[in-house]
Length: 374
Image (tube, rainbow, N blue to C red; front, top):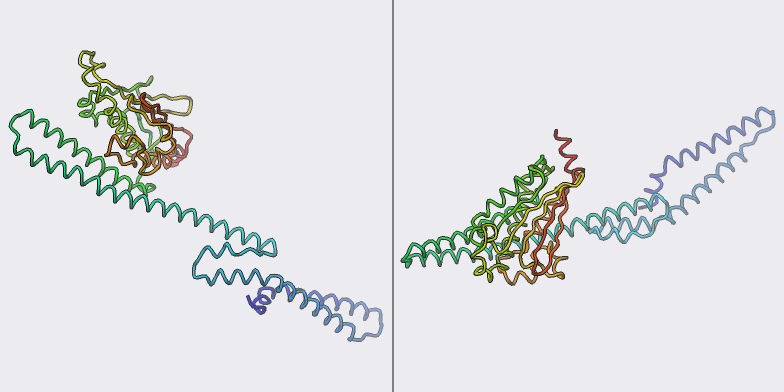
């Protein structure tokens, strides 16, 4: 900032100061005139000149004191949009300049945090796209081989097995496609959700029924446990169904790995006992909080992997047992749960199973949305 610009910013103060000095000198002149004393103009002019010099000295000193700060502001302005230049502003003089500097730094930090989040999400999205293409190629290749194999099928049983295998690969394709589409939709979450009272028991039954073939094929017994016939929570039906789908799909995947060597031992059991393992959906309400827990009796998760299960693309040591694992299901589930105002946690013990718990607080932000919409 040039000195003339500095003076223009303070023109009001300068004029007020000069007017004040003139008024004071005029009052003295009138007082002397009222006393019929002789009046000379030299003292008044001298006082006016002296006050002007003092004002000019103050303005020059104040400008020199603030000049380094102005220079830093100008360098930041001329940095061609580099927001990092704000961090170089380190010499505020007044409280006003200090407040301005703190505001700019706060905005800079917020900008950097959002930019970092955006870059991380963009990296995850790009990585997911690359992996999705890879994951889609494998089932397509398998289906193509099975179609070729179907030309040499001689019996009905062989044909049934072949169609069942094709159906499995088709389900994998559908699940991965749905996962990818939801990963894209979640970026526009605010435009694609509707809060309402949802019966989570009904949604749980829908998700379990959609996996009926897998339960039968792998001899897994699904159960729903709740003391009430209906349990309503404030949430979005479509998105909470997506979260349950991820948890139940994981439960099935890691349970079927656990029971595969034990299938021969399950022949003489009762109807419920025909399954070597059970997947339970347990729902309960405690005061103003509802809990939905999806428990399996699968292989469990090693303790060192549990803190990272919600990270994108993390499959852990269990991922080696199931190459089709993407490591994106729980990551997207936690993002959705956070946006809905709920919370999700996971407990597991190796060899005994895993429990994924969703906590629905009735006084969460979603409750406020319901009240505003009603």
